[in-house]
Picture (cartoon, rainbow, N blue to C red):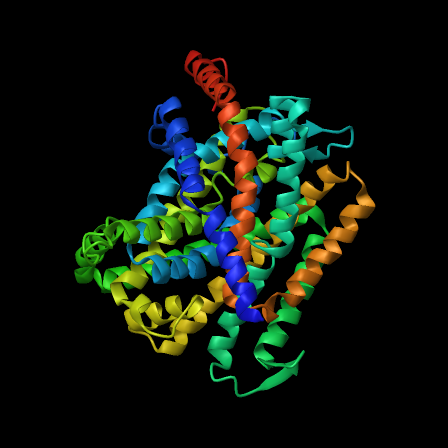
Length: 473
């Protein structure tokens, strides 16, 4: 029966993540890149400056840096460690190249999302902020497209509850803990007729309690935790990864060559080059979107809460999220896996592939590498759970027209989903997450294309005022 369910999920996944959606995602990114004249390159230094320099005035619930950390808390997660490994195992080293392509054009997409989030957000008398794709669809495209906004919100709730927000993250955490402390599953307990290691059960319960304690405090507590945990763990992981690359520097040129050859099917078997490219593209772009969420429509929900009055400024800050997440962190993971050849080890999947890469590539005892990687994964995934609770609660708030009781019930369902996540199979978990990602992206991408003129005008107007000295950086 389980195989049948997996087969059905895989067929749905292949359909929604088929060539048309891949083309649409890249088309939106390329179109916005051209319309904004390569802003992700020319304005990246300014964006990085704005990232750490909060605006002195402006309305919102958290600082721009807090909003970015909330968004990063949702993006820097299992996608950076487990997702990259899954992509490379399924699509070959070339999947990493397509993750880069998706991220480069995705930076223009993420910028556009941030601009529209501030442009069309709503702030009530109590200072509570609501914004994101559902509001820029409704307020920007008009009331007649409210059904599209509702569709996005529904998919957002589903993605948070059943996909990217809960099950994949807690599954990644408990798998990493289990691989470190009980890899042979010597200590097990039977749950619903299936054996599970006590490390899975205990870590799952502890994480569920921690999640509950934080998300009950709302956006300010989530942002507060994220501003501390995300930068610290990102730096630790990057230093860890850079050490591996430096130690194996002699293998780096061959790794890059293999990535490019695989991306374009150069070494594929006769007649299999096109198929090899399609698989690498599909897995790379799907996992890239899963990781950095550019085009997904999630990050602008956090961006809308930023204390700012300038849509373009927040758009630039939002853009840095994709750069940090994929161009920096995912690249570190991908290079480690390709350099060590861990993706070729038979029988390994998910976090086990990345763990093997760090064990083989670093001169430390394997237990040290495993522990540091597990710690990074635990904190990354934990903050992702927090960020996605905020996203999906805002989607639910929009769906139920601000009914607080419904939102509170959803919050407890979210905590319940975290609790049961460790007991779902890895393959099914990632497939479900992929499906909801694609369904979320569709309404958002339509809105970005429809409102691209607004983004372009806002951008030109902001930089004209900045150059004229009418506003300060």
